[in-house]
Length: 72
Image (spheres, rainbow, N blue to C red):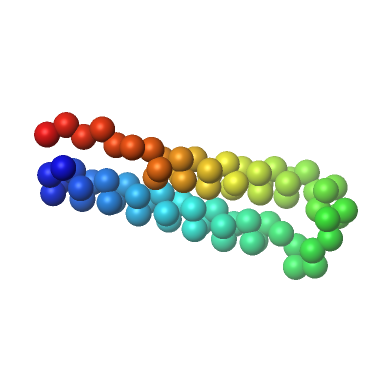
C-alpha cells in the first residue's frame, strides 16, 4: 500500500471514528437525566433518535472493519 493510499484510509477511519463519537454524544443528549425505561418506552421520538444513532455507529464500525482493496 502506498503512502498516499495509507493516508487516505487513515483519514476515512478517523472520519468514521468521529461519526461514532458524535453518535454516542447524541445518544447521551437524547436520554433523559432520570433514566426510567417505562417513560423512555413511551418516547417515540427519543427511541427513534437513539435507534438512528446506533445505526450510524454500526455502519461506521462496519466500514472500519471492511477490508480495503487497494491496487497499486
